[in-house]
Length: 209
Image 1 (cartoon, one colour):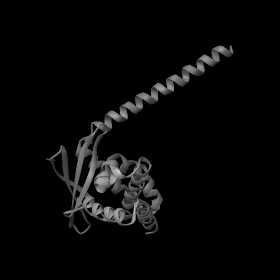
Image 2 (cartoon, helix red, strand yellow):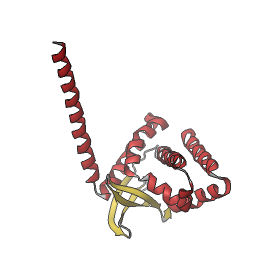
Image 3 (spheres, helix red, strand yellow):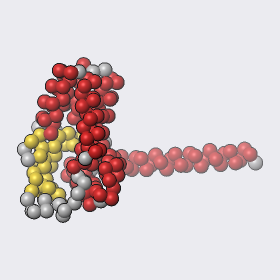
Image 4 (cartoon, rainbow, N blue to C red):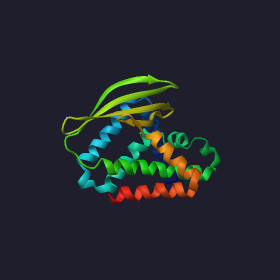
């Protein structure tokens, strides 16, 4: 009897593992099949949600809701490598891991801090067009309460897991270019630890705002 129960337990575990594997495969297939527009649309839908629920969620609630969406829609590894340029190869693997992790946390924190109030704003996707090096640009507008617009352009690159954002240009200003100038200057002048501390301070500022 004990042997039979043990066999049943093993079969049950195998069935659960198989079910989870199928679910994971299905999720991966869905993610990888998304178009660049759909990646941007999912991000913007999450932003609108935290704006609508901003006060009730609080900063931590907004951060927790946005984190999986932002991490899925952005290629933070590519972004931080591009920002640091040749400085990236001078870092060891642990430093690369640390800076990538903190940079992704700061990115989510910035979204959670900036998108916290709702006054009828809406996003509108305008067009999608091809860019060099197999990039796709998705141009959108944030329509404000007064009907004014903010031009937002998302540059995406395709990976095995789908299309991921690698740069955002807001009103003609590239976030990647701004961070490239700032981060490289700190890294070259003050070193790796100073850059990490600066990013951590920015995260704390977002939490307190």
